[in-house]
Amino acid sequence: MHSLGRPPRIAPIALALLTAACALAAAPASRADDAAAPDRTTLLEQRLDALRNQVEALTSELAALKARNASAAPVAAAPTAEVATPLSGVGANGAIDPVTGLPRAAAPAAAAPVSGISPDLSLWGYGEIYYTHPTHDGRLTQFDLARAVFGIGYHFDDRTFFNSEFEVEHAVASAEDRGEFEVEQFYVDRRLDDDLGLKAGLFLMPFGFLNEHHEPTAYYGVQRNFVETLVIPSTWREGGVGLHGITPAGLGWDVGVTSGIDLNGWDPNPATPPYRTALDLENTNVAPLQATHQELQLASAQNLSQYVSLNYSGVPGLLAGAAVFTGKAATPTAPAGLPDERVTLWETHARWTPGNADLQAVYARGTISHTAAYNLDHFGAANPLPAEFLGYYLQGAYTVWQRDEYRLVPFVRFERYDLGASFEGVTPGYPTRPGGLAADGKPWPVPQDRVWTVGANFYVTPHVVFKADYQRFGVNTDFTRADLGLGLAF
Image: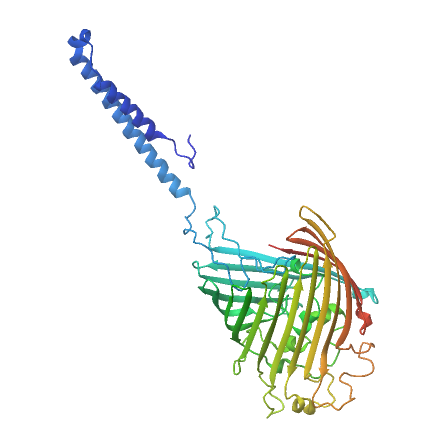
C-alpha cells in the first residue's frame, strides 16, 4: 500500500502509456499488412479503450488518495512573514550576549511544526536554582527554585509584535506559601520606521544592565547584584507607553510615560526584622522602590511618571548609558494633608569587553522629596521613609578557558548600597533603626553594606551555566555566605 504522505506517480505513468499507444496507432502499416488493416485498426481501438478505462480508474484512485491525505494532514499554518527585530532589544529570546553585553536580535520564527502551531508564535524561557549557605549559621542554609519564567510572543506582521513573560517564584505559589505567580511583561511593540518604535502595555524599565536582561546566563554570580536589586528594583516594570529608537551612530534612546510609585506600600514600623539573611534581603521587598512600585496591580494612576534612557554602543566592545525616572508619588493616606512627594531615580552604567575581559560599573541614586511630615508623624519609628538611597558596584570578569561551547569565567565584584543615605524629619544623630535586640535575640540588620563577591560562571553551552561564589559582608557580617547555582535560558 502506498504511504498517505507520498501519493504514487500514477497519472504520469498512465499518460506515458497512452502516448505510446497513440504513437503506435499513428504508425504506417507495411504493404504486407494492408489487407489486414481493418482488423488491426479494430484491435488497436480495443486496446485504446482498455487503456482509457485504466487511466480513468487510476485517476479516481489518485483523487481518493489526495482526499485521504488532506483529511490526515495538520491544519496549514499562515504564510511566514518577515519578522521584525524589536528595537528595544527584547526579542524571541529576551536575552543579551554574555560577552558583548549587547541585546540579541529576535530570531526569525521557525517553520510550522506538524502540530500546526503558527510560525508567528515565539516561545522562550529561563530559570535558576540557588543553594545558599550562610557561613555564620548553617541552620539558615536554603535550597530554592528561585524562579521559572516562560515567555510567549506573537508577530502579527513584519512591524507589529507582542511580548509577554509569566513567572513563578520559589516553586509554589499559593496563599499558604512564599512563592508568587506574576506577569512580568505584557506589551505590544509597533515598528514605525526602521529606527523608530512605539510600545504600550506592561514593560521593563530600561535601567542599568539587569532590569531588561536578567536571565541567569547574562550576569555573573549566583544571584543578582544588590545595587540592581535594592536601588534599581529589578525586575522593575511599569504600565505605560514608550517611544524608542536608535541613531546610525549607535545611540539608542527610550522615552515614555508610565505608572508611578505608591508610598502606601512603605511600612514605617515593622514589628520584627523583615530579613535575617542576604537571600531574605533580596526577596522581602524592603528597599524603597521595591516596596512602593506597583507592577500594574490595580495601580494608582492619579499621578503618572516619566522616564528617559540613553545607551551608546557605537564603539565595538563598549556600552555606556544613563537613565532617569521621576514623578509625583501617591502619598500615604495617613496622616492627612501630606505635601506632594516626588520620587526620582537616576543611574549611569558602562561596560567594556576588550578581548576576554568584561568590565562593568553601575551607579544609582534615588530621592523622595518632602518626607519630613510623614516621618514626624511616625517619630521614633523603626523604619523612617528615606529622603535618599543609593548604591554602586565595580565588576571585572575574564574568560580563562574555553573549548567548543564550554567556557570558564571567574569574576570579582565590589558593591556598596545604602537604603537610608539621608532622612528628613529625623533629629540628627537619632537612630533610624531600633537599638538593642529583636524578638529573636539578634540585633536588627543595618540597611547598608559593603559587599565583596568572588566566584565563577561555567558555561556548558551559552544557554546553560553552573555558578559558584563567596560573598563577604562588611557591616551585616552574619550575611556572609557561599552559594551554588544553576541557570538556563532558551
